Image 1 (tube, helix red, strand yellow):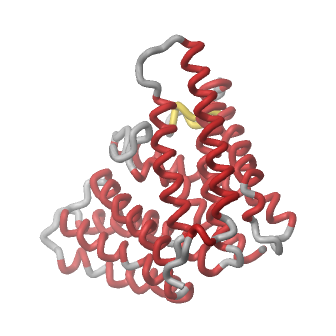
Image 2: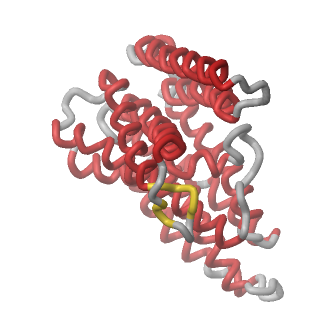
Length: 304
């Protein structure tokens, strides 16, 4: 079905209760922390809490609302992600327009056919090689093609795997919900552990704020997210896969974060945008998901 009633899903109430409990507990901790510190200015953690409060229900209703609502969310994220990426790497208007058309084609194809999604990549990349030939007056055409092709794969293609997870894996809806929370808590865990215990820098040149202690918090958060959402994991999934999934998510989250850090460092940019208070741009928020989605899909396709 293209559209489904989210309220009728057996996953809706338990997910809502658990997420509401997490938000309530987090708010209590933040308010106590604020009271004990005696600060009166705006707390970045409270700003992030409010942003998460908007993101969570949008994600929940998109996943439980049917394949069309999931696809619409992915297309919206793809569109804004590509906008931020095009500005970040300074794509010319000609290449940006073609990138948007090619990028937004991925999600509808993914919703219709997994096999079609695999065929789409080589077809579009072959067509893309015509760009520097037809737009020969654009300076640095081959360089622009390289950045456009990478952006298409990195954002549109990778993000389209969220639809593949939902539609072509057994229990895909529950997997998306569990994966979403695990990715979110991995980010929270990395931030908290890094700020509280961080002493050993992970990659001084690439991302000087990331620490080994933050990486540990990243994996703890991923496991916590899957534990909270364990009811949503398909019952037929093998035990070793369930136990290894948070490890895969934590690895993918770290990987995705470092890839975006490399991009921003390359072009001397702190944030990809300003859409999300406390975080930056859409790309700054979905960077982990961009790697986690395809990793989870292919690993679960092979092992689950």
